[in-house]
Image (cartoon, rainbow, N blue to C red):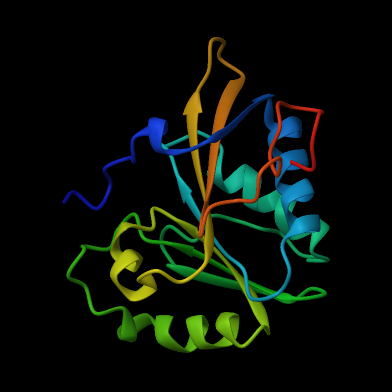
Amino acid sequence: MDAHALPDPAGFPARLATAGPAATEALGARIAGLAPAGTVILLYGPLGAGKTCFCQGFCRAAGVAGEVVSPTFTLVNTYPGRTTVHHLDFYRIEPQHDLDDIGVPAILDEVWEGRAIALVEWPGPLLPALGDAPRLELLVLPGATADERVWHLRGVPPLPDGWAQPAGEGPC
C-alpha cells in the first residue's frame, strides 16, 4: 500500500466543513478540548489541506505557548503544554522504515501511559505499530470553494453515536 494513499471517505461516519484557516484552527481547538492525555489522532489529507493548521489550533488549546510548525523535516516536534503534545509527520518516511530510529516506540509508550497526546500527519508508516489501539482519525479534503475543507471523522473503536454532528450541532 502507498504510504500516502488517502483512505476512502465513505469509511468515515461523521463529516463537517470548515471555511478558512481560522475555522480549521478552531476545529483543532474544539477537538483538543475533547481529547484527554493518551489520545492518538491521525490526520490524512493532501498537501496543503490544513492538517498543520488543525494541529496549531489543537496545540494552542492544549496550552502550547510556542510556535507550532510542521515537522516535515524534523519528523517529530514535541510541545510542552498542559499535556505534552507530540506532533509527527511521516510524509518523508517509507512504510518499511524502522520507526525506532526516530523514537516512536517511546512516544507511543508515553501516550498510552496517559502522559501525552500524539498528532500524526501522513500516518501510513505508523499504522502497523498502532494495530487496533484506540485513536481518532481525521481525513481532510478540499470542499466546494478554495477556503472550504471537509473533515471526515472516525474512531477506532467507533465514535459514540452523536459524537460528531453537522457543524455547530454537536461536540465536534
